[in-house]
Amino acid sequence: VMEAPPIGGLKFGKPEISLIAGFAFEHAVKGAFERTFTHPPQFLPMVRRQDWAKLICGNANAKKNVAHAALKQLYPQIVGAELVTNESKRDALCVALYAAHRGF
Image (cartoon, rainbow, N blue to C red):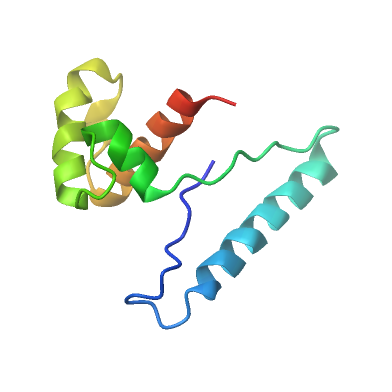
């Protein structure tokens, strides 16, 4: 599972580049697995930032610092939370928690 790239245009000059990069990554990983294993990996739908923010803090439009502050309140319940040391890792943990909550 991976986080959906921002596609609104806002501060990105060419938002389609994120979509192309995500597609290229998924295609490359699938190809590598198909050459190595008999069953290719199953990719889950991408997770939007708004989806994980709503799960973590109850507000889909919350700023990242608000959502991350709410995430830190959950740390005592998360094994290995001490390894989450920067914004990128917090984002990845939020995506993982949402994907686990959503299920397959």
